[in-house]
Image 1 (cartoon, rainbow, N blue to C red):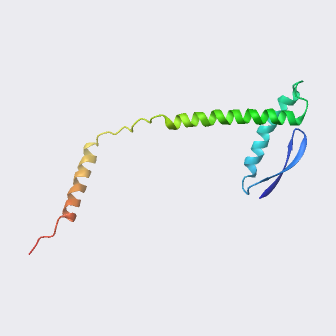
Image 2: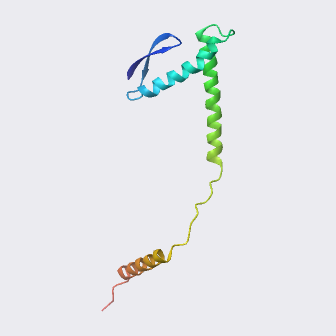
Image 3: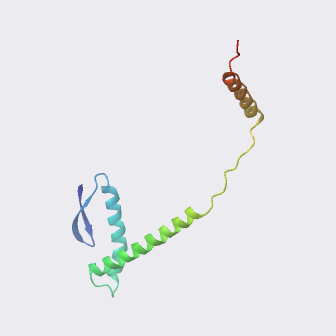
Length: 111
């Protein structure tokens, strides 16, 4: 586990994350700060804790909406791939391949 020092709303924190995930954690901290900063500037939100709770609820709501969207996308029938007829050259190659396979797989003559 890695330890990462960050600043959220002008307060220092040391956070743990899996090795190699430091950049993702720092990106998440930036998003959290961006979500919480406007909330702290509103007169109704007086504490960091209130801003954190509101930001967490907003993130959870967005996550829920995203999951629902992904589920809907996965449940929608996908169009069948478009198959085109082989060109004359491709058909000739296919015919030659079939003939070669027929020769190789043909039963051996009996004596």
